[in-house]
Image (cartoon, rainbow, N blue to C red):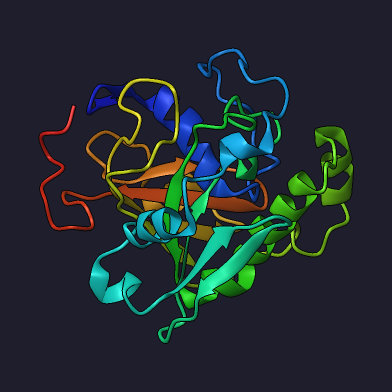
Length: 236
């Protein structure tokens, strides 16, 4: 299956970034390219030009009616830091490649930028993992050490609450070196102990894709518009 020039396999390889490590039990996607980023790049390459640029990109993950009142976190010296305190319970940020599964080719890719706005349920049950993983990375913890820590980490093993989801509607997202780097705007839902069949995902004609794992499955629903309201239908 293809959408916007992407094969289903390459799409799944890219969006596993969005799983933020929750799908660690899932197998690697068969069509994923060989890892071309075997080690962490200099930290400076993962940073954006300025906090203002990162705030703007983070807010682009959702329509301004949502992101405009959300808290915003940016990458600091030791981890993500709150740059703006919001009012609606959402948190917007720009994910880096290291929030992917440990065996994902994008893990150390310094070009990865995944603007996301988490809803309050995701802030409580998904965001802690993102923050912890980032703190490990910036502290110089090796990937093998992170894998060991993740086995007993409370944040890494927390199940998503019912209704957990995130907006990823930014034109600026860069989730893979393959094909169209920003793919489509989409919503991302997290479900514990679920199967793709529960949502009719990955079937012919279905608008829902899945990143199925144990104990968490991610569902991705492509949208027709970017967060600024412009059409994404004709994107290639």
